[in-house]
Length: 272
Ligand SMILES: Cc1cc2nc3c(=O)[nH]c(=O)nc-3n(C[C@H](O)[C@H](O)[C@H](O)COP(=O)(O)OP(=O)(O)OC[C@H]3O[C@@H](n4cnc5c(N)ncnc54)[C@H](O)[C@@H]3O)c2cc1C
Ligand code: FES
Image (cartoon, rainbow, N blue to C red; front, side):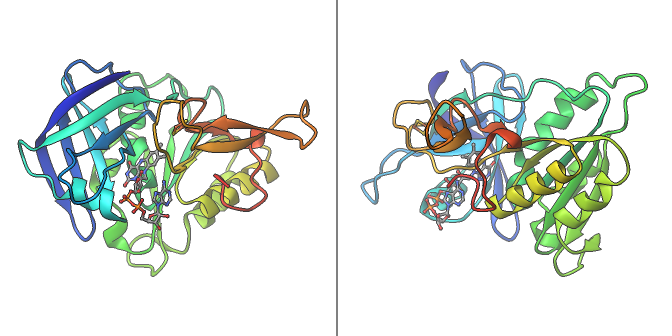
């Protein structure tokens, strides 16, 4: 992992509440899909800025893009950055996803900004080396309304089939991304990879298990250090060697992608 003083090379505003920042990443290893970086801005005495984790959205030779949705003060400070501003960047971190499933149709399922890690995933794994005879990957994207389907056109330009759901019906099918998944799982053998809010991930895991489809989920657990030293990102992983039936893994180092069958989800928030 590299820890560098980076700067903003590019910025795209995605109304109403997100930006894509292009950050210099000279000295960092090439990121694997679903890896993330910890980002922070220099302390200005306003409030102590703990680094925040963001998935690598896209990557160039010396830069990485991040899709940042504003939810609180940290993401707002990052979204306010302008060209040339300094950013501390550590990464890439976590275990990425290195290959497409063989045989079964790969289904990606994302809720809202959970789409972020899928752009690099599809660019690297599908765009670069389409496998002869392999089923066409399917990407399911859900959001509250059309405006929260960030960069939908970029995903539609990928060599994947994209199906969309919005809760108000302003784009695609009216409903939830899990409605799309339920229907897609009936079409044949599939392997699911999902990222989004915890209740969505719990529902995706349940639907996949009911259809005996392998399901990987990428958790967005709160993190402090991002590289395995603070134990602030613990998630429960089933383990019969322990009396309680589970152990704790660190989302930042053993994850963020886990096999849903290994996690204690209980229908509750996946990181709980
Ligand atoms: C591996 C990983 C990858 C991520 N990738 C992205 C990404 O590509 N784009 C993106 O916009 N966000 C991503 N996130 C989430 C992002 O890290 C948080 O939104 C950010 O840290 C919030 O910081 P804040 O200071 O703005 O909000 P805070 O002030 O810390 O919190 C504001 C509100 O958001 C909630 N919140 C904060 N962090 C999270 C979280 N991780 N999950 C759910 N709720 C949270 C808080 O409970 C609170 O209600 C990712 C998280 C992880 C762990
Ligand atoms: S965030 Fe510190 S151990 Fe994972």
